[in-house]
Length: 114
Image (cartoon, rainbow, N blue to C red):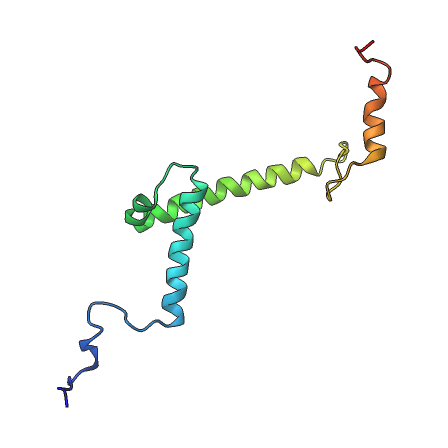
């Protein structure tokens, strides 16, 4: 029979060997943040740079990128909801025939082809 250690931390002294839900969620959050910064940084960051970045700077960078994309999405949403514009293409990808006909009326008979 092998020797038994009098304390339970012998095998897990320098790391977390048991994977519980909190540890898994922390790893998922870390790698998700790394991915978001690298992907949405548009080539400005690589994985090693972000992984070795100080935590406070990584959080700041993530918050700034998130703020930028949230503002961009809000601007796109507000511009698409203007009431005086009509869409020539329906959300399902088909042509909105009445709107297309109304938009093409000013150009009727003005063809340069003879």
